[in-house]
Length: 242
Image (cartoon, rainbow, N blue to C red; front, top):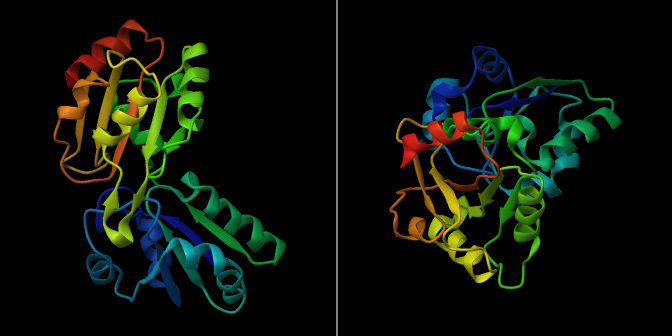
């Protein structure tokens, strides 16, 4: 049996009661460590879960997918995902490969950055395509092209900023804004910087692409939003974060 379990965005307590029960009954527990970070280390998870947690980096999760799926034929395997299970395409592949291998799968959903961004006051159904800004973006135009497409349709744009928790490297909001300006996005464009959404110490700050470069957002993870056409209720809500 393969359990795909979202564990939320904050700390060890964000796992659901259902997810916790499945983890405690699992033979082996893996934790992906490449899509985001929690406010606590694996030791805090192990203390609550009452079992060992194996950290799974991107290479292990992707290259070792077949092995983990096959292991699930003989044992109960819990694969923990920060946020929700299907916020990253890699984890959708686990479901597909498990089904192909005849492995039974149980899914436990949880909060995701894709829903937590609603705290900005921008309505979720007004968001367009989500995109990521990578570390090495000198010649990368994809995120700007997504922004232009969303703006054409009056939709909000959520930028997920690249991260590598294993080496404690995170693309900052300052760097993301600099990238946008370099690619001819007007520095006066309204933008919303977000840090640590889903945690108690989250930060949301409304400003311009230029002004957000001067804001100290503290620790990662980070994301950036450029609003599209806003309903008056969205404008009022967004002003909370001036």
